[in-house]
Length: 383
Image 1 (cartoon, helix red, strand yellow):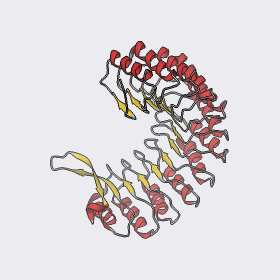
Image 2 (cartoon, helix red, strand yellow):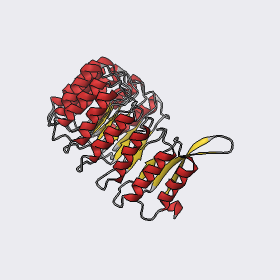
Image 3 (tube, helix red, strand yellow):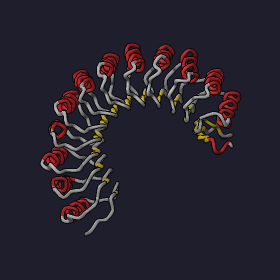
Image 4 (cartoon, helix red, strand yellow):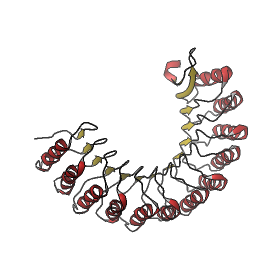
């Protein structure tokens, strides 16, 4: 069997025998150019995982991306895959997706050993909803800290429970000047006020941090956590370009603090801010408007959907954007708010304005039947 494609996808369509045959064929073809293999949503079983491990162990393996999310991979399977990667110093694998599996204690230990290996080539590792507890998260972070030659740039740990010790190790990792992480996803991780404060304090103390994107969706940073995030955004050394804080119980004061911090930092790199499903209130929207009015504001995408913004808030936002000729804002998400007819007209007029930088606008429209849906409006449809 010969493969000339660089990408092969078999999501939800492969049997045990098929996966085994595929891996066996790849191993027997030293001239294979396959770089990406997608096996998401399958049930590989022990036999298939052994075949995959043998493939990854082969010095001729050309795979750079392997997707195994939702594959019912257990401790034994995860351990086998990681052991194979460790035993292959010429591995080219850069991206590994193992989300929605059950690696267990031994699997996480093997993953930690892999990340600790100086020959590990992984740049992206996805471990969302893998039932990783405090000890497991701490072990993964400790392993990364002990490997100064790590290439890992993206780590997804959402829907896990890092707990106090896990967050402590995460903070120590982010504080490390050798940390290579650029994207960190801790959404749905039960992050508390103290946890958030520790993470932000670590980032502020590391002037050589490379972190560009931080996702903290559906956590509880609380007042002190939001204050620490604000202090981070205010720091001239802050490298964040994307910040996701949706559904974090952020109220007027917190939203105002975040926006005020960004306004006070003319060297901010933040391009994308997601605050959906929070309650900014009048003072928060007023601060948002002041931020968008600031000629130094670097925001390109702003998500304020489900934030209870009224016609007054929409008026303030539109007025701010119209008055800032150097605005960078290209995308504004305001669906499931209450702009009213007046607010919608002002937003539409802003989108139609040839001098406005706004290119994409999301609003909610309601049909006569009462069914509401999200409406995407783009600049080219209004010119």
